[in-house]
Structures are given as structure tokens and as C-alpha cells.
Length: 147
Image (cartoon, rainbow, N blue to C red; front, side, top):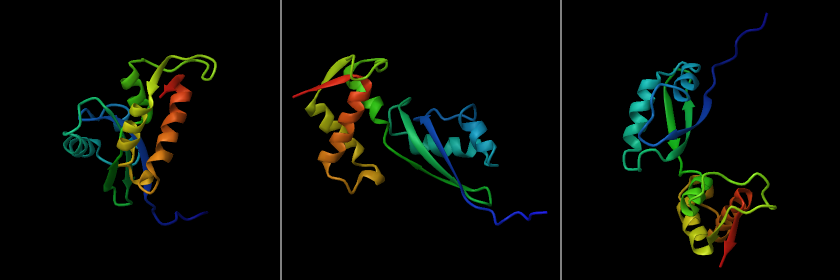
């Protein structure tokens, strides 16, 4: 018979609309399975994202500790959200590389890269590298970059 090892911290990744977190799916079931009170998270998340326009998707990393307490980190919205909003498209194309759904200027790509540079995992990268990542997202959405 095996013994249970020491309790470890668990990581939950969610994409939650800013200011609109509620204990309903996807937040409630994801945190409830880890033993965290989802209402506590929702109140704290909504307070922390009150400065952001409501409804913008915010990637969130929630660290659940063994004593059922939690800490979370919010990141900037996904690159695809910015690209869709800038170009006005609903969704990307079915065959990226073969079809195009619109175009975007390099100025807009660099503006998105500046916003994404605020993320902790991208702080050490030069702006040009982040812009290339944004350009890769453009291609997968079927957008054409124009100078």
C-alpha cells in the first residue's frame, strides 16, 4: 500500500474575461476540483482587473497551495485577441498560408508587441523578437502584414 506523498502546489491556467469572473464554468469547476473557494478568487480577480475594459480575455495563472490558499498572476490579453480587434475579423481562416482574411500594418504589429512586452516571460526579449512572434500569429490567422 502506497503512502500519499507530501502535498504539492498545483497550477491552474484559465482565460477569464476582465471584471466578469464568476463561480460558473470555467472558473468554478477548475478551482473547486482543487479545493479553492471560487468566490474568493472571483472577487479578487474582478478587483485586480477593474482598470481593464470589461470582457477582455485575461490569461491567468493560479497557484493553489497545499493549505488551499491561492495566488494568481494575470498576463496581457492573447496576441490573437489584439490582432482580431485591430483588423476587425471574427476568426482566422481555415487554411492559413493559402487564404487571407485581411491585412495589418507593421505599425500595428509593433504596437501589439509593445503591449506584450509587459509580460514577465517576454521582458528579456528585444521588441523586434516579440514583433516576429506577433507576425507568426498574423500568419496563423491568415493576416497579411503590409509595410
